[in-house]
Length: 147
Image (cartoon, helix red, strand yellow):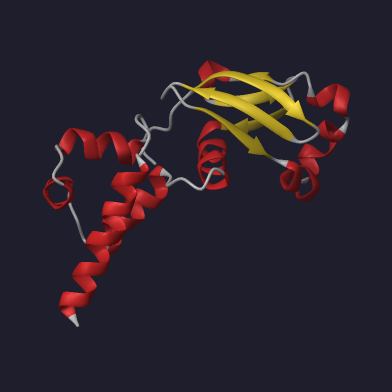
């Protein structure tokens, strides 16, 4: 992801979940319970009182608890998308790489502008489910015709 969206607001909503409002206009949940267990750095935020003190970090590029614990916006955005069952900018980029598509050829394949493809690649605009399904369909047809 070239330039992930920034975080505008964050709220602790459960023992291990965050509700995050992004600069894309999306509001999504991120369950980070497995991270809290797996990474020693995050063990302190297992304390519910500390967990609820979450705030937006440096210029929206992270969420933070005090000065010691911070999670980056790019990883959180990807987690939110994955947990919501939606495509992430990383998945869109992988689709382009896998199919050897440039901005122009991806735009042509999907019937869109290069600018919109750039938005999807960087995460500055969410990827609609219909566009992601078009990507999957295009790739399927390409591989069927190649066989």
